Amino acid sequence: MGKAKGKHRLDDYYYLSKERAFRSRAAYKLLQLNEKFPFLHKSRAVLDLCAATGGWMQVAVEKCPVGSLVLGVDLVPIAHVSGCVTLQQDITHPECMSRIKQVMKKHGVGAFDLVLHDGSPNVGGASAQEAVTQNALVIDSVRLATELLARNGNFITKVFRSRDYNSVLYCLGKLFDKVEVYKPAASRSTSAETFVLGLRYKAPGDIDPRLLDDYRHLFKEVVETREKPVDVINKTREKKRNRVGYENGVSVLRKVSSAADFVWSETPLDILGTVTCISFDDQASLPLKEHELTTEEVKVLCDDLLVLHKNDFKHILKWRMQIRKAKMEETKKEPQDEKLLNELEELTFDETTFVVRSCLPDCFNVDIYDLTDLPMTRKKEIEESDDVVSIFQSYVCLD
Image (cartoon, rainbow, N blue to C red; front, side):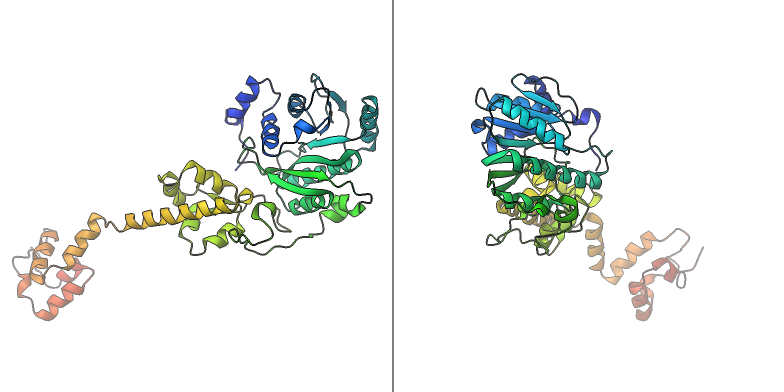
């Protein structure tokens, strides 16, 4: 499915951001991330990488303690945000680091408590390439964070779930005490983006350079293997479904199963463990989508399986069981034509003779040859024939 265009992108968060004078609807993503994992209220120095148009900077100024340093860096100029400092720099170039340190020195900041990254590459809509470039950009921002982030500081970044997703999680897991993955409601359901939070930076004295070398090492070696399909229900499993992402070598962003296939499958857990989305868009699934049992909550859960928890999967399985039962009960109600055929099968041969006679074309003069006078062998032949008219041509005289 392509990206929404024009008026279809003007959702509730677009209008809410306009009401609050935020520069982009992305501001609500940060607000919802902060609501889930409070981190802004204790951050006195914030570095926002790829910060244009400045929506996240506005949220940071609003939620951080008064007098905090909020520094925004982007390749393009950022219009002035009250209470913030901006730099026009490329975060992949060494000069960017020196310019940031100059600002830190000027404001008496030794290290940042929080590093944010909500950047996206511009690759002209090529989804797979965009995901690879995006995750490489994430590692560039991590590289900056390792030099500028205070011990126990936090790092929040946008990530595209792709073949390199596991590698990004592995990298952050080596640098932070805890790694969380969360997709806020303000993030469009059609987008493959999610957000990864590295909490409590370990500030290791010696970092393996291969950990931050994305193309030569990190993105070419898969350090985590997983079984297929994933057991989404077994709570004793060490790896949670919403922490895993895509297996190595898979470049597609979404694996889709139709709702009809899922509902009527004899192995629903295997489907939940191997796909990322259950779609209602195909013709066979439309009746399921319109069924009263398919609530909006069910549709939202089915749209992105990777971010679900155990109880969410149980909810989907419960819906499947209920809608299967409802659909099976509907099929038990025989249609009228099938009912009529069953009644005809119960008729005696004499009764059938009358029914058949009434159905024959006018060109057959059935009164000349009464069917009930036929020998039993020929009656049986007529009873067992699939083409009644053809067989009657042998026994009935034409006008």
